[in-house]
Image 1: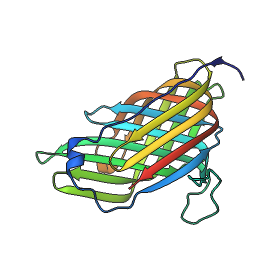
Image 2: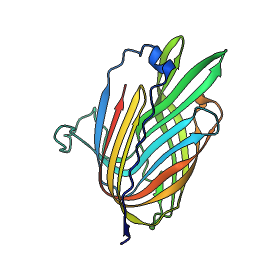
Image 3: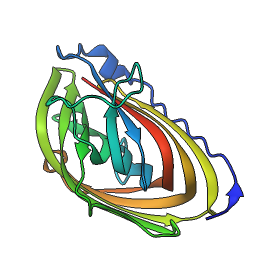
Length: 228
């Protein structure tokens, strides 16, 4: 497979908003998990929702393997570590007015996928993701912070390529008060437009998303996910 050489670099950084910074964080330990990304396919999405203050980021891959972040070596089998396989790192942030006060809700996580959840065309022209997964829901308001574990939700995403196939190097950084993800990959890729529907009962009506993304035939990569 051949294509024009090109380099795409994306920097995603969201500042910690005033309300989030003003409220003390819940007492939770920070945990970072590192993965070797070996493809063969991957897709990324970043976009805005149909309601003000809604932001979404998602990185999905058909194969990742946990590694030691210090040495880069494949981590030894450990019941506490995720198993190798398809995986998605994601974050959905939403602001809502509740009882005359603003509440910031973030549903985020680092979850396994089924083998059929992520599908990309051979030419990376189209891509789809349909996954029901569990995540952490954090609610921040003037009254404090509430954290709920194992909150289910469904992500349905469609990508439509808008650029030519190219040898591609990607770099993403995303950070919020309770969640951060960094991703670096190389391989063949195409820029894409993306639409999505995200259904999480705790966030209310399904969220409609419009944004940008990439479709990739990954040669190698590194994904780091930090949660609290």
